[in-house]
Length: 466
Image (cartoon, rainbow, N blue to C red; front, side, top):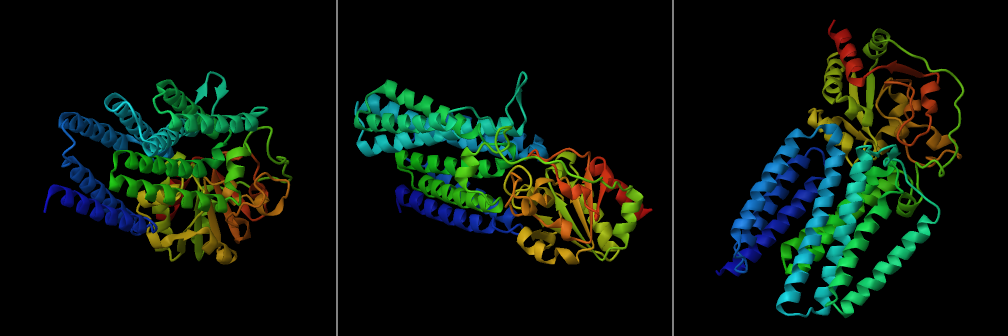
């Protein structure tokens, strides 16, 4: 067996690891194992590639591997769970810029050596550069929105729209298409190639700035898909089978996940990308809500929980901000020791990235079989004695079901207001990421336990243990 056969066989086995790992990522119970299997496949594919006879500069490769290991390992250890969406956004961007650099390097090499490029090579180079540049700048804007960064008094996080924005974006797309076709006809035009890089970067910015923070789960999954498509194009550039396979899988799974996220919000991808949801000029009316909120003390909350036969916890981004996942898990254990049936109701777009709440609860070792999807909890929620809403807002807002003037009308929600009693753990009466008031807080069967979610959970734990 020669080296070429062993390399291709390793690629096939790596592809099998990717498929198996991706399948296992579909369940919280097997997600960690699936991630490890996929990582093993990637390590094997990388080692196999190093045996390629065309490689003669190993010192730079090993230096890059060492640097990437140090930076990536440190970032993974230091990142807080609340910053995980930002990290995912950056990783998508790094994937995009890697493909862009591969296309750029291959273009430069072909021009210098042969002074000509075949049409197919020109097409895949342009695709890698366009999608890679779009993914890089789009991911950086998504990162800035998630970090709630500001340029002086100018905030980046809201949906940023301006008059004629859609027209500008359409003209930008036409320009990119025209210039890309021009380049494929005459690839020797270096200035045109660099112009395309600039246009792709601008397209990424213009694609993400009109998207509000509430739509970030969709944006992150879409950018993840883009990074995969860029990697696939890069695979065609360097004729690497496993890069084509892996890129195709990431691209396809990202598109499927994006579709799932849009369905969870009852919105089309076009509406997410171009509606400017969350801006001051777009959306329905943010009506005033009649009534008064009913606050409750930790001690009175304990009495309700202590007498409950069933309790469902609905986590949201506030849970991540308060880093309360471990306290909530301990509270769940106290409830179970008291004979209460405990479950965790997960909304698909709760948090700032797909699966955000699943990641948080898994990190706190919450049993996987207690995680219940929205479609499974809603039919039985009327029989649940107490629902604890911890840091969630828009995903439990009954206006999505009842008020046709609401900007979130039609979005599937967890119908917590149908439970016998609702207890909301919240710092204040402030609105959620969608910027609208939640009438749930004023309903007769709702009680508000004000304070930091972690502190409130610890107070309840102390009541159980006392």
